[in-house]
Length: 225
Image (cartoon, rainbow, N blue to C red):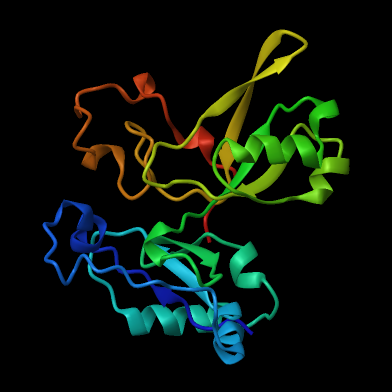
């Protein structure tokens, strides 16, 4: 069974620690080796880290209770069927390994569109995923299916704009492969980032016509739960 989600607290103090002027005591570096107890390793293997994309306060206990009810199926249901929604905000999840800080973890599933049939392979999918970050897995059913789509999961830096696609060199001819994001929540059509919408984006003027924006609802692969 999967343990309750671990709340991710991303404070400005933690994120901006490099700007602090450290005291002599604070500059001391503690060596963290890889040794852990078997019981701790077993506990970590049952944990997920979650990031709720919202600027509003929320009830952590209510979140845990809702997720326990939704995730009653065993195995990897909670991890593979996301992202999930809580109180109108998206919840992103990732499995913990124990040697990463929760604030460093990124998440998301991507669908490559209009892909050349000869390039619907595990190896090519892994190459595409590497442009986002660490490759996680590929939907093997898509590889054999007579479809122009191929879904894969990769660690994506959600602090950066979503990629609309990428150019693929086919025998010297550049071809565009577009990306859709599975169960993509609301995001900014202006800057392409998750966590806010276009009308709340500080970097874009509201008088712009939505048709002139680079991003849009067409980047959604399927509705969020």
